[in-house]
Image 1 (cartoon, rainbow, N blue to C red):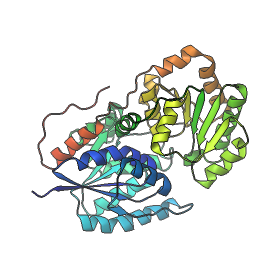
Image 2 (cartoon, helix red, strand yellow):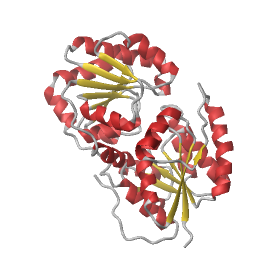
Image 3 (cartoon, rainbow, N blue to C red):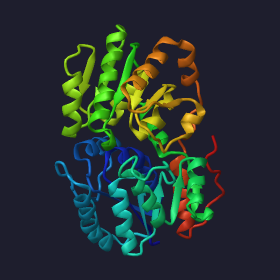
Image 4 (cartoon, rainbow, N blue to C red):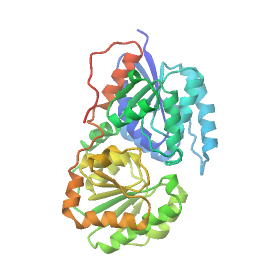
Length: 373
């Protein structure tokens, strides 16, 4: 029996984390030949995740360059992925989320008339330039894709408002929860310390916003003598210059290189409070009952805000400081956020996605319920 060929393309650490359990699920299906191509848009951070999940890509484009520009990266993905697609002739290309790899890989597949499946489809903010370039990347990918795997009902509604066919939209939950649960099962109990976990790296937060974030963090650790801050600092030199310049000398602020995924999951479990501008951490933190303050002016993940486990605090120093300090001072406010329901998944997104793929490719499957929190 000729196997269906599904080629998964990703390039950054967040994509790899969210695609890894799906790649493993695809590999278990006898009807499918699963192929992985990585662009290595993030080189070292991507390799950490591939090693953790024991994934060996069939194609590694190794496109990482220092201070690479978006036009150059987009062009390299298109030019170097196209020969891979021509060689493998996949029946479906899978992409994830909103990276430049995602948008360019979708376009490369479209040029060859290969169907695209979009994992974590339908996230939106009202501003095309925020987050940049992610917001436009995901909008463009939605217009190319033929299968849309929406993590939540809100994401599905966004896609419907964009005029996409409801028969091609599947509410699956987010694959990051699948990855999170698989990883957490193997970890020891977390230590008992009051740790604030901080992550910040987004392009729109470079410059003054990053300075505001760091100054707020410094005020928090100086105000609270029992508080420690753990900050895995992105490898981008623009980020590191600001962070180490403001926070590099305080004894209770630990600045470290980006963690492998399993240690980062343990860091989330061990934290008392999380401050982040990451999209994925907005989904992961609530799974451990951790209040998450989002260091952005917009978010494409409003579900957790509506549920009460995430708060959008912006990028002004005083807003960040006062929001975090309130949770450190007020046990009732803290518990209200910590106990809120996580609306992002139940750990079964990957089987739902594979089910939909097989149906799309002409292999009828038993009925399967979509995700509903």
